[in-house]
Length: 271
Image 1 (cartoon, rainbow, N blue to C red):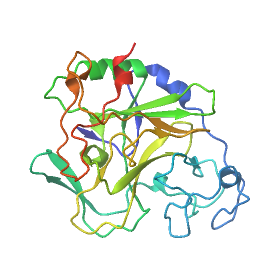
Image 2 (image 1 turned 180 degrees about the vertical axis):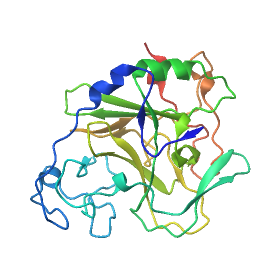
Image 3 (image 1 turned 90 degrees about the horizontal axis):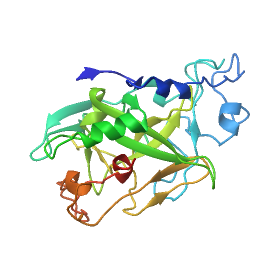
């Protein structure tokens, strides 16, 4: 596959409709932005002075949106509100697993709430993501991730589809686990398209395999986040065999609370 550090537009040109650039802050000559910065004041500080994600409870049903400073901002590159945009800063290693193909593991100790890596690839429209998913066979690997967000109680959910199958980064090697050590957070930097970012759920030791729950829900329940947050449906019971669910694959995470099947996004089988 072709390696990229960040998402790139997929084949459908309509995806560029979402690329409207955010305005930058005016925090000129400041070592770091503070609570008065418009990038921070809207939702509160996302990171502490060490760059660790703060104010986010990964087990909660609600999550505050994260908006980083961007290229139009007048603050310095060392601003505390710039983390995901700097890319991977931890030592990671791709390795072959016993039963899950390749995986990704920590090559150094990682502190809880540290940014680990982004899940990057081609940005797809629903139509392209649906068509690619429907063409997969039982032996094909499905790398497409769908993040559904709502901007208000009655607003239509916004969906972001990322596919690192042919163009992606190390995030494509992170396997699923029903007891993960990473959690997924949408982080916006320069526009309204979120960076699907993975943070450490707990302290991780050197040599541990890095995993996250493909449903985005580490509570093993339905995650419903409102007011600009994420909504992801997670099916935990064995599927009935029909033309829609034959793509479901068994889970090999080995966790004591394993649900038996990998998460399944039925929206990609709906017209």
